[in-house]
Length: 77
Image (cartoon, rainbow, N blue to C red; front, side, top):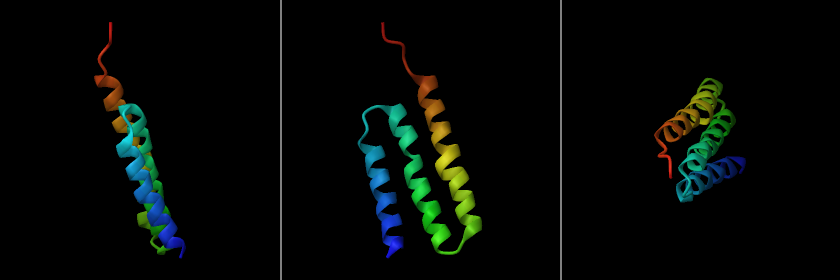
């Protein structure tokens, strides 16, 4: 039953990230599906995959996306 909650959190987190108009906010919100997947992997007793997903999917990827958005912003006059 709890695996369905993790799946719903993952899907809703991805939808929320897609619906954002601000690119920086969307880049930060891409970490929510990563956390949901990491929790799901941990529940499925795959701790090595869960740890990798937690590090990469919920920390490194959103930071790189946020840095890319921040570095490519145009200055409005």
